[in-house]
Length: 376
Image (cartoon, helix red, strand yellow):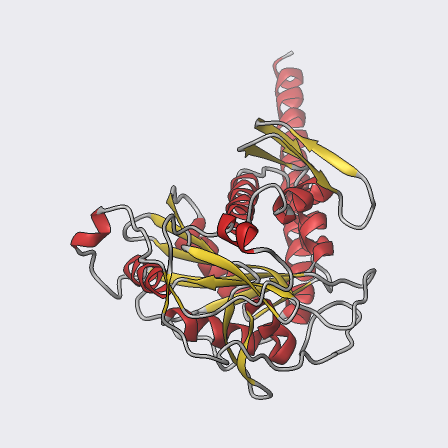
């Protein structure tokens, strides 16, 4: 009798060992598949540029994240950055700083092919990610350590691979679904969004303005981060990796991504700080432009540099910033009336013109064909 019980126990232990062995082996195989897929896809996406900076300290990182208005389906004549967002991480202060740059911001473009004034969305059009990075660095006097460019397909696919995201919608509105002619209803409060809905939420700007549009993009980014950090299924990570195949461009390789996840993201609970510009709308040659007030640019620059530990906080940082209203570019009112442009102005009083005549001249936008939207 005793040997029979012993035999059963031994058989149970053997079965358990085989089961655990298969479980561990299966998990390792899954991780192996994930690693191989990720390495292949990220290798295809890897596109270093000379304009990114080396880290000043081990505790801080600055990313420029860009969303293109192009993909294989649209196949437009050229690509522009429909969204530009700076993300600063400081693991020492446990603070994440987000700053969206209005796509119509009228700025000095930094490119090997063109140096002049134009909407910031065209920096990528003139010279790909290098020009976009150089232009933002020049505008805000900050280092940029890494860039990431996504097209519409990757945005939609990643969120769908996550199983959707939960976003706290600030106000009720209806927004158009991308290239479908249909609309989606957004109700104020927590709402679950799939990829198409999240894109519609992020791109909407007719209900308010470009600054609020930037805040909506930041809400989506936070929701994606929160969902991704709490995934517990390897299969979902594989879906996310697969969804990026041919739909992303960046200067991060597999090793760098692993290091950033381990050192900056895993187990970190960052306090989120949102920065925005004071600005005014004006029209120029039939195009709508956004002028970022220079004192606002200086203020945001200071805050971003503080987030990276490059500058210290000072007394004015404790007060709510308000621009002095000094502007540099006159409107020709070809696309808007003085009343509507006054409506799109964060300065409450009457501004003071301090510019020079003829300073709104822009260059011709190049037509660069691309099937996926990305430029080499």
